[in-house]
Amino acid sequence: MIGQKIVVLGTGGTIAGTAARAGDNIGYTAAQVGVEQLLAGVPGLSGLVTEQVAQIDSKDMDCAVWRALALRCAHHLDDPGVRGLVITHGTDTLEETAWFLHAVLGARKPVVLTCAMRPATALAPDGPQNLLDAVATAQAPGAAGVLAVAAGEVHGARQVQKVHPYRVNAFNSGEAGPLGWVEEGQVRWAQNQPSALDGQAQSAIEKIANVTAWPAVEIVTSHAGASGRVVDALVRDGVRGLVVACTGNGTIHHALEAALLRAQDAGVRVVRSTRCAEGRVLPKPGDRWPASDLSPVKARVALMLDLL
Image (cartoon, rainbow, N blue to C red; front, side, top):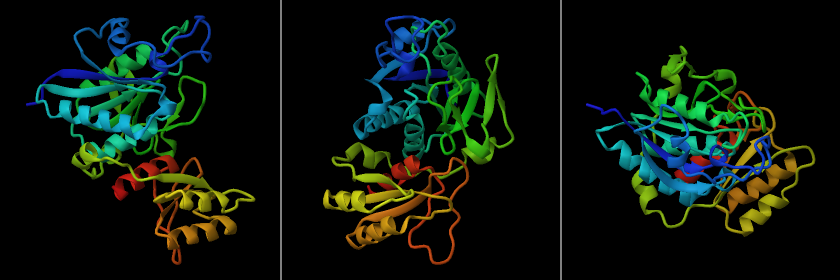
């Protein structure tokens, strides 16, 4: 039987940020407030287990922090007394961390990432409500897998994307829509909840625990006037995989395509995604490279894990 304990893992981010002036929502320093102190300031969140895994601005997220976070998640998920996890995270790379954890954990319990667009010192911070909603989601019947909660919406790890640099409702799931909504402490699931939570995790946690060197995978973008210079330089530098943020349905500028063919001949794995905000690349006969149905940043995570 699954217990009712909720564990909150802190990694920093804007939700833990502070500014010199209470009215300043952009001139702040991220990752200044510890997760225990953060929860202490929110009525109704007493009694939760807290752990500070990292204290960074999420723009600086890296593989070492991902590894540490995944191992701590796995540790707590194995505890039968734990109902679910909440992770406080910066907004900039939340979607990448969500997909990484989805890929390596195979979590049957809820792992809920939450965040804030305003620092803890704002006149009207959004972090406290997001924390309350994240805990409510972790406790909700039917909650499972890696989720993201912000501005009253629940998103799945596959679809969630940051789509705005400033407003508090900065996340959405594109044409798929949210999995549900948190309303006065209760989660109302949308009809697409089961399919959005489906998917086979790669169960890579043992490999993550023992990894000493992560494979170098980079993203290149196709655009008007694109050249292959960046690709050639990355190949010389030892890159092992490339994700192409393609135009439209996986199309690539001819000069960039020629460089990618040279990279492939040198043993580099190439995967296509689309730079379009919605939809996915539909494969067609004659395609040179496989197409991912993930966004470019998530396709990079998937290719990196595949290379491991």
